[in-house]
Image (cartoon, rainbow, N blue to C red):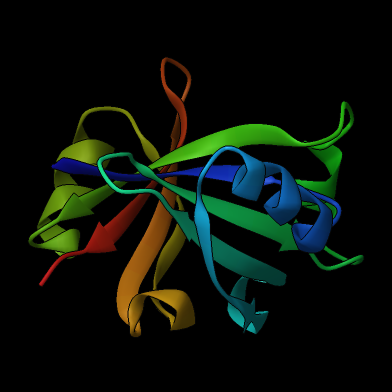
Length: 129
């Protein structure tokens, strides 16, 4: 497993993006992700871990609930070589699978999924190349 990005929840990708641009990040395109009821925008900075801004749709109550104190980091994403195998390992070790793998438009339709553990919180897996 390799660190891929940190996901931040935000009410406004546009507003949050401007703050990260001041920190030296470059922004990719904002992408609609209906399967997870959100929009996302990836931010990149040479030599640094990527940042994913996640703006939940208004009806996405689970993500909106996590934003009670405003913009906040909420998951770390790991790139894996075999997502199904890694899911089996993590679930066997006590993680809960929150979403089955789905294609992610922002990652060239590579499969992603979310898991949760009491000891680590939310993580995302993205199937590597």
